[in-house]
Length: 155
Image (tube, rainbow, N blue to C red):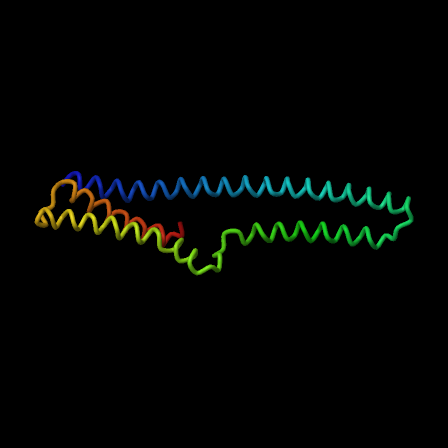
């Protein structure tokens, strides 16, 4: 009985703590990634600006129209905008129904397989639960209640 209680509390409390720690680490990683992307964008902008200045100087020396330099700058700017837009949509669904279905179904399929194996084990025991089964049941119940609580709190 004590193992069931510990499994229940350990599962839900662990899930909640893990969720909070994971959320904190993800936010910190996202912030670091955003800062790195901003630094890279500044570097790209500086290099693009230097290239544009060099192009203007060379075109003035060669007598080429300024409009062509503006076109190159617009292309560089649109490339940078396209890069940022590509980063924004990197984690959206792929649109490929098979890949999206696989990504959406792998966790439920694995959980169903584990529950089926456990049910088979119980069937072979004549549905007599031992300490492992009671602890496992406590963990499952804790996981689902903690999962509901975390989903309600937006984690």
